[in-house]
Length: 284
Image (cartoon, rainbow, N blue to C red; front, side, top):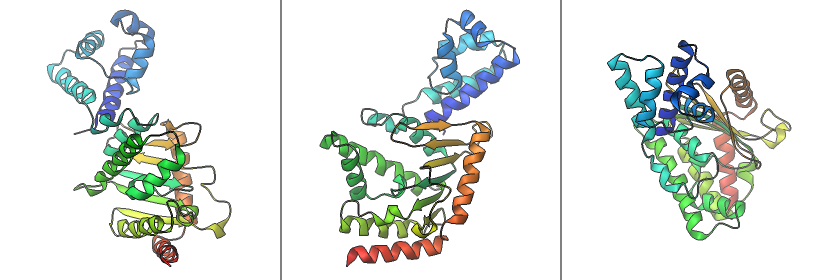
């Protein structure tokens, strides 16, 4: 079953198609449905849950009379309105992360570049704690522990019967900075090597010796879905805020950037050798 996040996006795409097939403007639909234009926009972009009574009104406007199609759309709306497991962490979720977690849970492939941290799906609890402590000094112990549990629970998707492909590229800084201390870092790097034993996970390192490279502007993640209607997304993280990119041309440019990074990085085997050596240095 689709996650509620993906369910909302699928329903939004379907409703936009129906509106456009009827050649109705959003302004006209807003007048006839009682929903505001901003609300309709949020619905079509998968950012707002649609009530069943609101859905019925839109289907009447769009002339959807086929019972099978009506039921399919009602079922989609029910999925979109369901509570997700990560909703329990809403009070500690950074802005935009809830949507990302929902998309991540449904992705069939994740291609990520990180400039200074180990990928979140590959972090140990101790490393994660050190990252959170350093990044948010105001967070109380309960908040920190909740964020750690969230990140550890996100990692369950790598243990699914059909896990997504995870292609993680990291700058060498991610394995050289002793976050949490030498012992924590050694354990983190050993965990990286172990995780990369899975055929679904690959880890590559951009070495310091390379100098400037295609990821120098910062970290990002490409999310791919097994659904022709839900296009690839790019999630870009920065101190100023996190954003989603869905426009095909922009997504294609990030995919090209990731492909270049794969060529610029050490091979997976060379990367694991470097990570193992770094772990041994921390253990001395």
